[in-house]
Image (tube, rainbow, N blue to C red; front, side):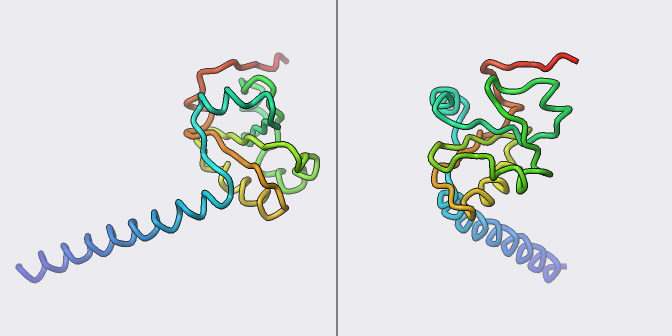
Length: 133
């Protein structure tokens, strides 16, 4: 019984230690790509940036940040050639997870100023637009 408890505690400690290592590795890696910014900072500076919505077209049409271009992540690699490298790129998706993948692609392609919306569109309270069809 005591051996089982010790083993269980050991497994939990290994898991938590692994999570800590991942967090320590992840944060500097994300900073080297660009940066996660909150909604206030995103809204304050978005007029000077290329705003890219990475969600699928039907989600974009249902509502998107005013001024955003639809570039679903499924098509992003082919369509990112239409972005200017001399302007900042602001990315967002539903929760923020896809934005990191797109930011990595942009960084690899030579983009220097890449940012994504913390918590994604789900947490956005700024101006939006819906496409009417």
